[in-house]
Image 1 (tube, rainbow, N blue to C red):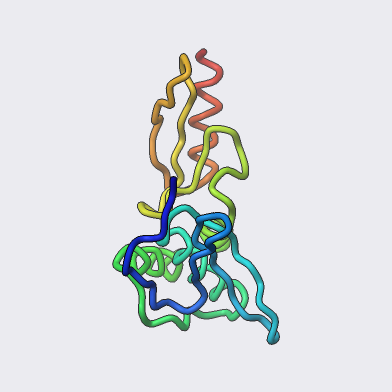
Image 2 (spheres, rainbow, N blue to C red; image 1 turned 90 degrees about the horizontal axis):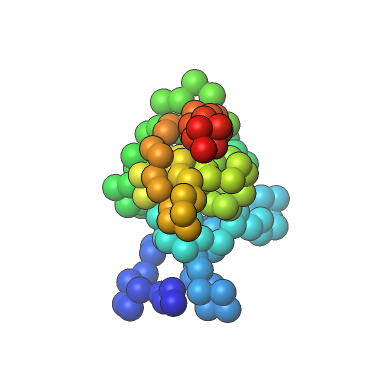
Length: 143
């Protein structure tokens, strides 16, 4: 059961704990209306979604208070030639997309996995979604 960390409070705008579903919720205000960026099991995932939302909707990252992992993600967003795929990765639900590929907000990477004999088996971590999806397809062809 997921619970909110005791006496831990994120001081990042655009994040809150949703008691009804026991998840972190990321949001952003665009034209005076709140827009949801998704609900996440881990605060870092919501934090990365918020940063990606800032870049997507405001054109720049305005947050100055963030965790070390979020700073790493911000640097990847800024350094990317085309940060669109990273922004969408952070905003997407971790289970949306190709079966066997998830976004790992803690590492800021795509994780490829397969279900082999009812056990999840890690295939690798990738920067690009396409690379993780190709690895899953290749593994499925082998089986």
